[in-house]
Amino acid sequence: MLLRLATERRVLFLGGKGGVGKTTVASAVALAAAREGRRALVVSTDPAHNLGHLWGRRIGDRSTRLGDGVGGRLMGLEIDPDATTDRHLKDVSQTVKRLMPENLAGEVDKHMDLSRRSPGTHEAAVLERMTELVEAGMEEFDLVVFDTAPSGHTARLMALPEMMTAWTDGLLKRRDRSAKLGAAMRGLDRDADRGKTLLGNAAPRDPIEERDDEIRSILLRRRDRLAGLREVLTDSAVCSFAIVLAAERLPVLETIELHQELTRTGVDVGALVVNKRSPAGRGEFLERRRALEAEHLRTLRTALPTVPLQEVPLGEEDVVGPEALERFAALL
Image 1 (cartoon, rainbow, N blue to C red):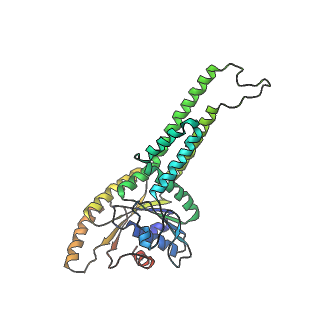
Image 2: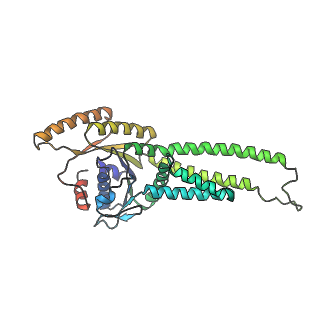
Image 3: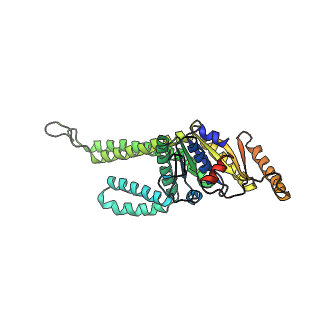
């Protein structure tokens, strides 16, 4: 079921409570896609990366070739939150310094240093990186799979494009009103013939107006990129979200809440993947465990009756490396 969902989409997010196997499922989906001849990229947005551990190699914040026998069609990447935040703040600092008087450069540096520790800075930087990866990934790959951080962090991240687009639109409107007022005030202070040379040619443009135009241009580019990301996230023909969970009380309740947050944001939830389901016929202990899990799954189905659900049985081995991932993917 999950592999079919991945075949029908260009972007797939895997999310859920920590420790339920999101990285394993994301890697298995990407590997299966590569085996079918599709170019796939699996991206980890979780600060506590497990992608490299799962594949048994160092990955980091760059595209790294994964898997054998797939012709280089499978790549992996781990977003480095600290490096991403540093690059984000450096770019912002350079832009602000270019638009501000030179004597304020020190104040800009102080502000950027404070921003590094401010709430939301990390999320904004990761969102910028995720936007880049979605844009580039949809050009270079047939499928981009995101292995996300635990539920609360992911829900906020998925809601950010809409929130920041609205915030930027509001900022642009305020800048337009301010620019009109500033132009009117400057017009009151100049003579009718001011701004013209003796030859009648137009005078050099007001540097304040040039600065305002550049700021507006920057904000428009940012808004358009965020709007583009939101368009991808909310297009159910292009993007979907699969929630991975364990058949336990807390993961089930967290899954229901995450589904509500995602659908409120406009993101399609295309699958529920119950990982490590206790197998039947394996002794009294596992039978009791399986019966308890069934109760929790009834709660899940009562709350989310229409979302496709897939159960993946608890295996006898750790899923580490391409061969184990191949076997795991066969269960999807």
